[in-house]
Image (tube, rainbow, N blue to C red; front, side, top):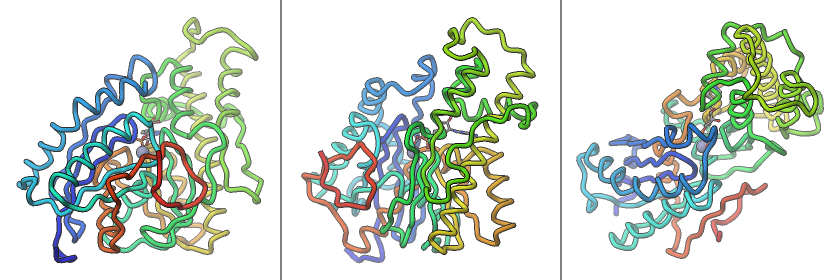
Length: 352
Ligand code: KG4
Ligand code: ZN
């Protein structure tokens, strides 16, 4: 294979979206499909792992077939297959990995492992259409809130992450307390538009602690709960919260998350000395966060690159990071495993 002319199929099944994309060596997207499971998990107010993995099993082949069709390619045109192997839900990761291994083996093409968090940051590379490294990478999603020192597209180091809930998880849980629909992020954003963010001074964990780049959102979640029910209070289903109060709590909660994320991002830039921040993940779609980061970038004179809304939530286009890996000759053997948990350092792909 000429290293300058190839097509890679990328697969993404880390959580609750079954996604595939075909990208060229020039990072051109030939076709991409995302099958969302939002409907399936809505009535539970969050992702149910077993339901997610079963849905991936049902959807992965049709999603691959549709992606090939959209790309006007057949399986024999593929020069590599990439799959997100870490972090994520174990059952979900395994479905993508088995599909990728089967294709790599039967087509005799290279298998490439993708780190899902690196891929979220790579979404910024795809939209910027220019090299964005080195940079501080921020991933704010339903499962993660992490800052990375991204030396290059493929070399990165974790600078800090949440010690409890992810930002998106807090959005989802607070939305549920307020009787807002799932997923909570967009619902809180909408409700907050009519609210006053100064109504409640909710906690902003670690915000003044310049020694750490970690986050914590569980205290914030509890503070919202106590605001609604009082300490140790009753269940939320019996609460009748006036619309203006919902809006004020949503706005005050959102402002607390935004303040923490912006403060630690700025601290990450100071600590690394980089002048570029790349932001990805579902919560990066939040308008208040985007506006606050943009203000901070203007004041601090650094470059902000946020993934476009379509590439914030899980997708396979961001798996185009596999193009860089294939170009560097970083491929995997068929005993590649999954690694559901987040690790503090960039390590090998040896997994379960
Ligand atoms: O990146 P993603 O699709 O999944 C993970 O990898 O976790 O992110 C999903 C998360 C959900 O928690 C959802 O509530 C949140 O992203 N989200 C938002 C917004 N849109 C999605 N959070 C805040 N504001 C939004 N506009
Ligand atoms: Zn994600």
